[in-house]
Length: 64
Ligand SMILES: [Zn+2]
Picture 1 (cartoon, rainbow, N blue to C red):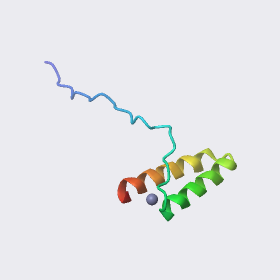
Picture 2 (tube, rainbow, N blue to C red; picture 1 turned 30 degrees about the vertical axis):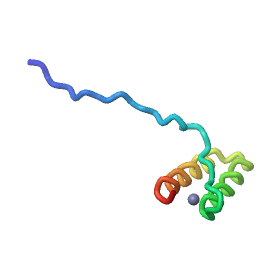
Picture 3 (cartoon, protein in one colour; picture 1 turned 180 degrees about the vertical axis):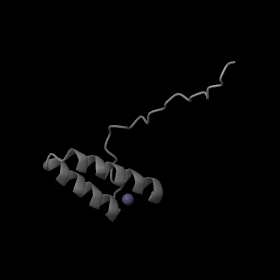
Picture 4 (cartoon, rainbow, N blue to C red; picture 1 turned 45 degrees about the vertical axis):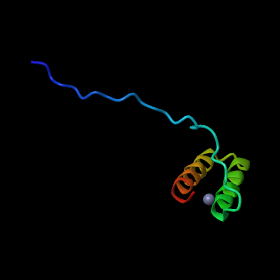
């Protein structure tokens, strides 16, 4: 009568969830995103900042 439940894995959060990804020196694309992020920060644009974080992380995972 027991229904089997799938066992859920413990959620592992990345450690660097809140830290800013750092631009790689000499990479124009990193630099570009970092500049956009600074601009968004200056404008108080939190969603723009996190958007840049996502873009930089994705780029660094793929390219670096
Ligand atoms: Zn880069």
